Image (tube, rainbow, N blue to C red; front, top):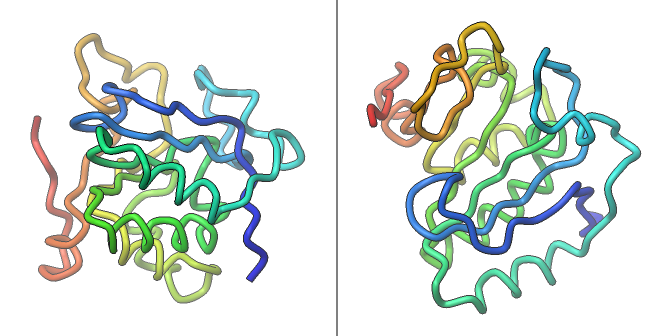
Length: 169
């Protein structure tokens, strides 16, 4: 596998993209084009820059204050095979992994065996924040999501129970 991932940016230490101190990788490329998106510059699949995944993994693992990693975007699920590779390395080293996506959990389950890397990514993340951003459903004080339609999902429990298990904050 080509070990280059296309990113629009990295937040090296963040407290707002999941619990605890996190490294956030912003995927380059998104098909959703949600009205009011706060990262429209991440939509172009040819934007951003290619980065070496092993270097990104090593740099993240060498930061002792990080408790987790978050994949944001763009949409990480458009490069699911690459993010799955990174997620597995982070999980194997005890970091908590969150992923955002404009796709719904149900759509991912329905297509996980048809789309490159979707099954692997699903099985190597702890939490999925799903659904398109909907500007008319924005609300002050929402934690870890932009609009009320988006769900914060416990992936492991959802997979084992075969139903969506939400994390209420």
